Length: 227
Image (cartoon, rainbow, N blue to C red; front, side, top):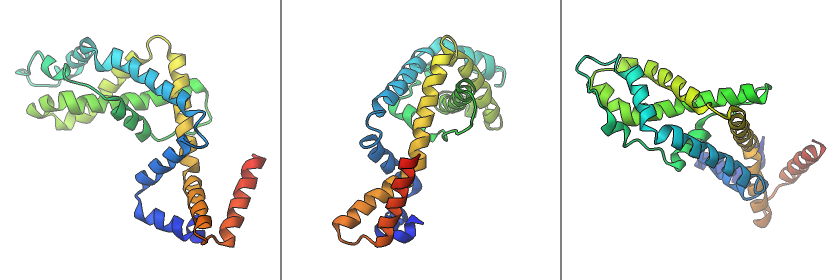
């Protein structure tokens, strides 16, 4: 619908891929309507990243236990017994962590915070497992010809990561990850309108705005006010 109303919106859509489109909308939202909520969401992201850094990313003992539990039994008998040189170099930057969070599709299930939070942490654990396997275990696995077992190992490692993450205050963790999810879901939902509204304002400045655009904006604003 919006594509037919605004030439500038149409041009913007065909010159940007979907990821760039939503990234720009997200940034506009953070400095606009979402400015008040964004610091709190960022605090939740920082809290989860700090927790994972301490118990997973920099916890060589945990990574070694994962190795001993899953990798050694999967490798041939001449597998190296001490993979510390790989595990000690594992790191996950906060930037990469935020990218992983954004790559998890926002969930919209009408379930309790605990159930949704548990599902989100499960998804996060799988992504982290993949990251650990890709950066720390894959080279060893490839040496031992394990590509066919990679997916199985990914899921096995993810289970251990999930159990480690939810130790302690799991309810607090679920609350934070659900709030992050809801924030991302809202941005995803309104992103097309955010960009369209930006184009609408540009059209006004450039004297190219149409009556149809104005009518669409009126209806959209009226609908939001009623909600």
